Length: 466
Image 1 (cartoon, one colour):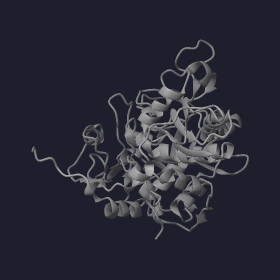
Image 2 (cartoon, rainbow, N blue to C red):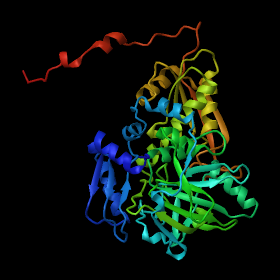
Image 3 (cartoon, rainbow, N blue to C red):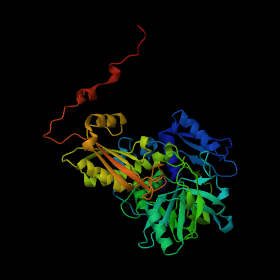
Image 4 (tube, rainbow, N blue to C red):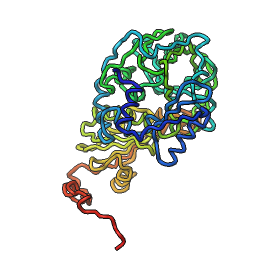
């Protein structure tokens, strides 16, 4: 059986049964559905939730599936501490897709006027969102020059029964391809896949060099080729085991106002006149599950953070072979801040690692480089290294006017340096110790081998008040 959303739900149910809740009462897709997940979030809980009855639709909605590193690690057969190098190894070894004839996603076909988006249980996530959005869709397009397929995750506002907004980052390959079609005054065919194994979402959020390879990376993450079948109305392949596929095209030069929408920095940013998609067909499984992604909340940050970390691990290690670990902490939205640990052998390696990070992911603003004795997944240790090994006059590098995280409210443009542009000022914090022979004080620690051998259950007893 090919791996897909359902096989993964079954795996989570067996390995982590407390990670999935089911809601059987009817819920409103406007705020009520996400309010349930927000209430869990307030209690520090981030389970996947399957809503079986959604007002106005006959389809269930699954949300928050990718809101925990434990579940993403499970999807790779790994652990939280092992998931980044595991992702990096698979990311570096793409597996070709497999073409199949048909598939479950072709069970039901709506075409023409019947391809009505209002029949899907799409949601309004946050209080100032302009309407219903698709936020867990993987859009697949074909580069007109090379013919290579490119996949990415973008936001899609429902603008009518057969019209979807298309909001893309100008630094990403999806928008680069769209501009090619627009310059040629040609429509760009698209398909949007909703609902599949987390491998598809993670691969679409990764940063392979050059255009394409996301579908092949999906296969390497799955451990088996991703099965693809022909779309119904456009000349593109689609994942055969997806839950729902939306087919359509982007008319060249056409624009419609899009937004507001709560984005990954947890602000309403990025609204304006944008391209849009005309829907030609919707195909699906007979009992399709509509997968959603909780925008502007932890799931929005976490689902992309692991693939970005894996991409960074590969690219940085190419430049600095002594790389130890990479983390995109949630304090930076899983995007804007990057912690890197290296075993420094030569002065200047810290900056090389930072440059590799910036070139891999444009949205990174701040990079902290630390030594290999610092756990980059422990933010207190990173900040301790900054406090005790960093001096701004020599260890701080500032790079203005760089293409960056344009959805952050402070992004600016060259004309007036006011917010609302696509530029950031990048910063490198070199928190590494000097390379020998410069003497640097030893870190005060208990001998690690003794700590490792301590078995706490042989020492500790509950205090009884006496």
